[in-house]
Image 1 (cartoon, helix red, strand yellow):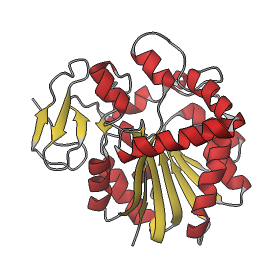
Image 2: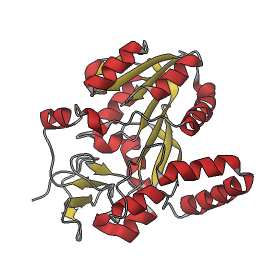
Image 3: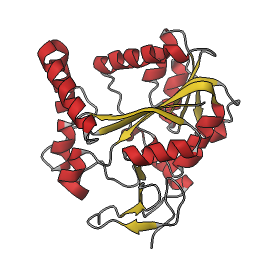
Length: 288
């Protein structure tokens, strides 16, 4: 048994061979990948109430990356409103607020909501559609490592279109199904988990999803190679993916100290993007 595509809704889906732990299907229409099994909304909400799923570690290197990202958003700044869908502990919104943005977010975790209140951050508990934000409100919407978790991503991208002002932008990141790790590890790749991830995107399918919601791709790219993912997927490590002592974090620190290593990283990311095989898939989409 297969379900309609989780991304475009087509019933032209077929199981993918070799994925038995988490059975997957591919859509013939948009090339989207989604799980054959689907949780209910209540099951998913209950799952994300678990505070153990949230990391309290926030890397100072990630803070620098957020500042760079916000620098790139300045050209969209008119209403001065920014939304983070799936805001987690609110780290991105904290930095945006420091820079003078009027910040909003959504999140399911009650723990994260309570922490946000202590930081005076405006977070709605639940999905973005139920928040009922006004039409054409936001200059920028960010959705970082969230869309792969959703039961109905198209519903969310349609809502993004509604609440983004004309000329505003949506920034998205999600695991890349065509990552070099997935080609190498197949179903052993620990990004492929249920019910954590319900949809898996490629350059083609993420473009199709946002275009269906009338958001125009400005740029789509891939980057990154995770040493932590490689080890945890192969069972050689049980380190937390986001932590102060993970292999990835230690390597990032080395990069920050070495211009030569940063140059090498830039070249490698260029190669990964050329072949669309980086671990992370990223995109900027504009409302025309």
